[in-house]
Amino acid sequence: MSTIGLIAADLALALLCAVGWLGAAITATMGPTIGRSRAARLIVAGAGAVTLARIGVVVLLAGRGWWFVQEKVTFALPLLGLTASVAVGVLLWRGVAAARVPLWAAGFTAATVLLLSFFTGYPVSMTQALISISLIGAATVTAWRMTSGARIGRFVAPIAAVGLAGVALGAIPAQQVDAGVAHNHPIRTRVETSPEPGGEVRRYALEAKRATVTLASGTRTEMWTFDGGSPGPEITAVQGDLLEVTLTNVDIESGVTLHWHGYDVPNSEDGAPGVTQEAVKPGGTHVYRFVARQVGTYWYHTHQVSSEGVRKGLFGLLVVKPRSSVAETDLTLPIHTFDGTVALGSNDKVWQENAPEPGSPVRLRVVNTDSTPHRLALAGTAFRVAAADGDDLHEPGEVREVALRLAAGGRYDLTFSMPRGGVAFLVDDDPARAALHLGDRGAAKTSAETSAETSAWPELDLLSYGTPTATPFGAGSRFDRDFTMVLDRGIAMVDGRPMYAQTVNGLGHPNIPVQTVREGELVRFTVVNRSLETHPWHLHGHRVLVLSKDGRPVTGSPLWLDTFDVRPGELWRVAFRAANPGMWMNHCHNLGHADEGMAMHLMYQD
Image 1 (tube, one colour):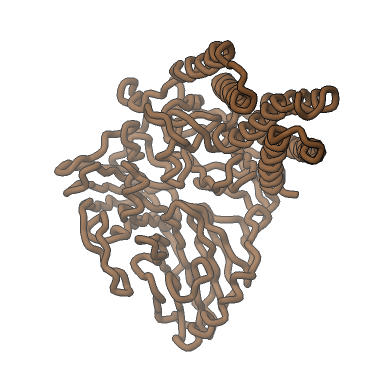
Image 2 (spheres, helix red, strand yellow):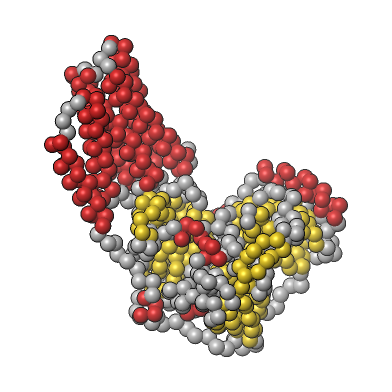
């Protein structure tokens, strides 16, 4: 069974435990008749069996990693085992009537343990443990009082003391990250003012402003835009050019910046508000300068209130080509959801393009600008995944009738030779919208009509795609720093307020400790997803080399990514060389998750 399958089984058994033990308590409380006594005993036997089954599942889950079971092994199951054992012992020794209170305690413990699975992130804290015990005690005493008429005044003080101790511990402030530390302690970073030999200066001016965008279907929607359109103007360069981009904010009240997603710019040009610059307010300007050294497909977007700004349209594409490039049909395909409608650029219906001559090369640069993954399919031709996240794959082979999963923020370059018939590119297996047709319209339609079959195509496994080649480091290297990030949901403080947060190691931004490295060090990340949601992980200023996923090493082309999808139950190990000094955001690129606390910083020492 997969890890997420074991997590689901554990949750199902936790629910059955709660129903069983509470059901036994209710049945025992209803009256001391022989029938009800026998029913209570049967329910206790069933609840006990389910509890033992859950212990077995947790043992199996522990084999997938301590991160998945920490709170279950150290707190939840021992507490449930204790209360359940007492209830069973009293039931066998004194009978059902005497076991009412212990059964209530076991029932409320099972219910609390179930709630902990949803509201407590890794690791469980002393605060959460004390509050949980206090709630169980209060509920048990209340049930006892309501069913027996006993006086409970003497129990109020100790229960309240335990609960207040938990609240007091939770009120102790966690380590806070000063988001403006980059301003208070200047970080050494390169400043680039001229192109490399043979390059030129390419100047762009972008205006961030509100505008009405008309999609291909005629749908009009109010958006935040760069230069009145969404996507914004495509920024292009040749390797070695100096890019100089002047950003002006016309009327975006919350402010705007430009973050160059996946591009290893100097830290000062990263566009992270509060870290590398202040957000540009209405009427303000900011100039970004960096040399375009990385070839490939990238994109830019605002990083100020990005969960809202990107969704509303503040993004565009960045394409850098090598100095000597093959003549080819080159199309950029940004995928974006406008008010629930998926579009390629501004094409929310079928985008028809004339086909190049049969046999001529075609490159499709696909960019996912949404916060969730998309499934891609190319019907009517064999193709290669030439690049992922801007980095060329080594000897990618031709594939046909396979789908691709593209992470939020990620990019694929797909290349093929134009066939004589039509070609259809589909997003989420939907031929009626956000689809590109190349070639004879009739042939392209035929490809689209048969594309219902694409939903059955398997997803290409990039970990085994292409052929291996040497890398500067790998899974067997000695790592100078090793960080573990356990992604989950739970109650945490985010920006000074308590909320049901997206957490890293049980904490929310800005209370997640800074990851500190030195220039030149080899750094490894272990990223574990305990939650039931997908988290596309993105480190600014660096590309990471994927080492393994769920313990399975990469066997194909080296896979360098800047955003990688960590699905529920998955465990990724990636590494990078610390070679770009500064203070960098490190966050989930489901931008709503980042806004809900799943964001942190990586900072260079000295």
